[in-house]
Length: 333
Ligand code: AHN
Ligand code: ZN
Image (tube, rainbow, N blue to C red):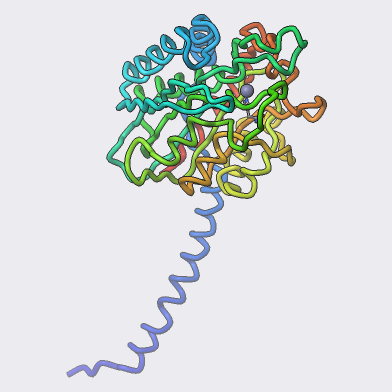
């Protein structure tokens, strides 16, 4: 009868894991490396399509709350999201502006794969500013087309919605169009200047989200993503509250060849919808916003002027932003 050599067996058991572990460590390292480098190719973002959605919005006229153009455009946006297969939520709210005006507001949310717990939210504001108060004085009370400031982010997101309907990413996506972002106190206002007069729609949604206890891994806010020669720097609030997602986006842009748009340097800090998404819902949210270090405002020269119109929208910028955001979400697992 053969006797089992327990000492040998013990030694074998003790040593084997290390041998296999050693080699599997190496494999893991290699896998991690390739995981770091290889991006899943996302579907091709169509900038012509995004441009059309921007032109459609601008054609309604300035989307200033309490106007017919605003109401009609709201209908258009909800219908578009429905047509692209999203589950649509409409949040109507009466929001109080800096001067006491009640703004009949509407946040519009399109949810894809609403059952999934793995979610990313994409957002933009869809209203346009009632005042061209950064331009010539005679236009300070003229509402702007907001082709870039408002419509560009929404146009890019509608094109992404169309793409998601054709090929779903692995995670759930919520596309949120915030209202009443751009009704903030103008400098010419003689009354009391209060805090938090911008981003009224996202503040409302932050307190009362479209579904109770709404959560997402992170959010991406698109603001002014259609200007000529736009440059997107690390926005300071995003940098401190959504650093991981922010770096991922800029790295992705770099790999896609868009490092002339996505600059890996610090920009300014902006009060924008991403702040309230983060403060009120604890969702890290990155603001992709055109920052121009050479203007007084830090924004595009057309910002809050009557020149923020369709003529100043550049499809190449839409392409860079749209393809980058799509690549980021199609790489989520
Ligand atoms: C302020 O001017 C306070 N925030 C800039 C956010 C903004 C306005 N984005 C578009 N319009
Ligand atoms: Zn604005």
